[in-house]
Image (cartoon, rainbow, N blue to C red; front, side):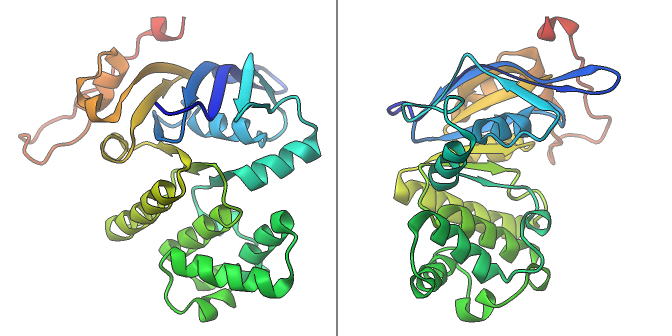
Length: 278
C-alpha cells in the first residue's frame, strides 16, 4: 500500500431513537493510501454510513465517535464544522447512489458543476463555465454545451451519474468515495461509468473508496476489499484473492452468487453466526 492517505480507527456510529439505540457502525478500523479500496456487504451492514461518517455527513440523530479519523495528517473531528466542510468538499468527494436524489432539480446541471468549482477555486463565472465544459468532456459527455443547460430530469440515469462524477471531481480531490455509483444503471452504461472512474482515479493519483453489493465487480475493479457485516469489518483481503477469502461470512456471500454453469437448483443460504458480532 502507498503512503497513508486516510486512517480510520475504532469508528462508531449510532442512532438514538425514541425506543432504542441502533448501532450502525461498530469499531471499524482501516488505513488506505492512493488506491482503490472496496467495501462490500449486505444492505444494513454499515457501508454507506461509514462513508458518510468520513465526510461528516451522518444525518441526525446519528452520533459519530472515533479513536482516530485522520485524512492526510489532518484530524477531521478536530476541525470546526465550516473548516471540515471546506476540506471535505475540496479534497474529499462523494458520489451518491442515485443522481435523481442528489442533484438540485431547479438548477441546470452545468450551473451545479460550476458552483462546485467556484466555491473552492473562487473563480469568475466565465472560468467556471469553461472548466465545467472541460469536465463534461472528461467524463465523456457529448455536446457538453447543450448538456450544460439541461435540468436533472432531462438527462438519462447514465448521464446523470457522469454529471455527479464531474461535480465531485472538478475541485480535484485527493479521495473519492463512490457509494453504489452504478447500481441503478444497466450493464453497458455501468461499464462505461466504471471505466471513467478508473481512468480519472489512475490519472490523478487519487484514493477511491468504492462501496458496493457486487462482490464480482469489487473483486475485478479494486485493489483491496473490506467485507462488512452488522457494522463491523469481518475480513480484509486483496481484491484478486477475494475468491480465497477465509471468513465464513465472506465464504457464504461468495457461495450465494448465482453461476451460469451451475446446475439449476436452490441457492445456498447464508447462515449467520451471532459470534461474528460478539
